[in-house]
Image (cartoon, rainbow, N blue to C red; front, top):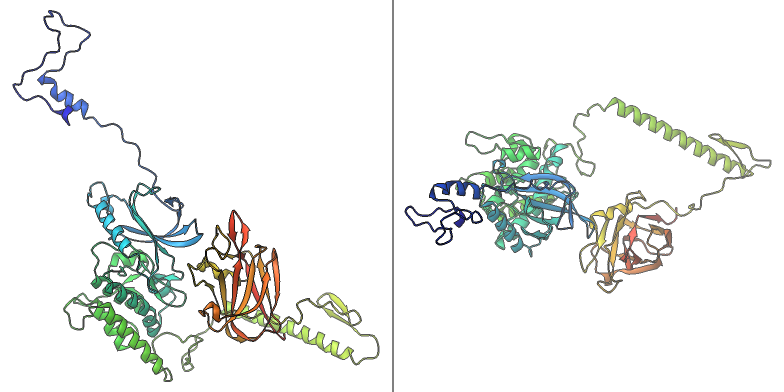
Length: 567
């Protein structure tokens, strides 16, 4: 600023002329007098042209050279956060990324040019995330990484980010879009999230589950917190309200907190009574137990109101009691709750009105049944003629199946799979890893999807097993004990060594499993004989040696197929 300051009024001006000179030296410019000071200030303070703004961070952008943004799934403007489904390009897995973006102040987010506290608030959120790094619970996604502001490879418009495990399944809006859930299913869904909030509050932490897009519902029906970095001013009380809001939404399909958040999440806002409290779930649908009705309203009511629920521990305890009571009285018919019974329910809706089916769907069904009946008749006719030919003295008659004539004297060649048995249906599959992260567990279901072009693979290791860990496996579970005759493994990872082991439970210790056989994979399909093995409910495919490739070691499996014995 010194070059912009003018001399004080009345101060002597130092001459720039040589002493004793009577003529001005043209080589030495005369310094401006006080009357020119304003001109000097204007000239010196003229800003240089600013460079254009950097391109915004969007789908396809990569953070710190590792995390590629895929799909934006939501935002929390109160926290200045965006929620993204991203890809960890190093470990080749899906992750959930909460991004704090530097936005204009009118957008309602932190970090604008006129918001000097934005960067500080973002830093506070990042610090809080770092403090919660050791907290793990099944009700919330595990924190994997925290990206601080100014980190190498961080875009200019990003103030920070947190990376958590991706929660497969559906958002709250997607879950209720297909129709209302049964009240007890809603209670079972929220119980794990309430347990996570209770554990977090005991450790002095908060979850931030009061935003509908931070919570996802897993394929097995559990509510789980997916995105981290809640706003700085959130408290355990907000978590309690969030638990009640998630329960209220699963019961009514309406979000009872912020109407703006509801609109962004694709949910309807809850109707409210004259006192501003959301109306009771039981007034919007039948069959809601009085306990869940009171719990939902108690968490959402103002502090100090009658029946107000103060803690996440109280929410978890009441949900557990409701679920336990439902299990105890499962032998009695449930109250009508407005939701049709599912095929797995013990009590079915035999007395309710059957709605007329879609005519087009009925026509397709009849065509399919007719085709099936025709195929059965052809097969029965062929079998009958074959049996009759065993007792005939002359030449066997010609049988026409479709357009190909078959003679009993020249029977068709039987498939090599004859006698191998029916395909055994797999009930569940999961990555088995007792010593580290489950390698690409979100993709392991691809080995039983019937598509040989999809695959699951281990992480790429720089050293062969057992240098870093003894191995990694795939635990396959059947609905009941099955006698297996064979297994086929489709894989391009030739040289991988796989042990086929039986297990009593899916989470059994490795030493409690029993080896059935061991094989080395070929490039393509590797047949594995399981003849003589005992009936099993759980089969562990334990990879004890990886295949070399791409400068490291990894094993890829495209498809698994089990066959029953005696087919």
